Length: 167
Image 1: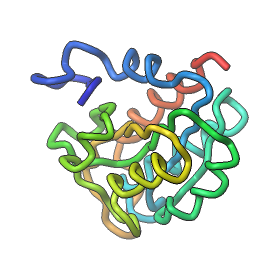
Image 2 (image 1 turned 60 degrees about the horizontal axis):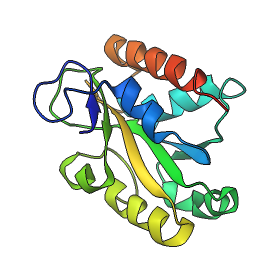
Image 3 (image 1 turned 30 degrees about the vertical axis):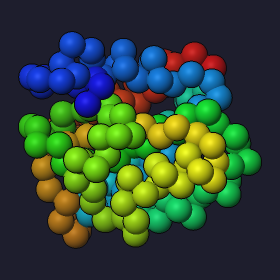
């Protein structure tokens, strides 16, 4: 992890906000991932909905099939893509972390048709963009549940940070 919140070990020296500011250089795009009908797995779509019209960066909702947005992302020609998703990195629910593409193999994914690591490789080879993950540790990803209070607070923090990025 290159930036985290409340974590010991690698990445603890840099906050997720400063890591995000460092990697979100133009041209950059945001790719929200997750299933809004499965509790905390819906953090990506929740961030996407709340950012529309508030963020200088393009925001795309990849839902559970981010590979379907490789064409639109290619037309945007970003240098970097920040994927926003629920990710199990063995932290407290609602913890936010920013991960380097090489670390994605160690981060648990949720309900996607293909793995985050595979999406990152496609982004590199098809779009020519380096991928990063802004992950939020979920509490529950059960069908028919809503975002947990911890993940709602994390979504609020992520939306504030992304909306404040320069255009």
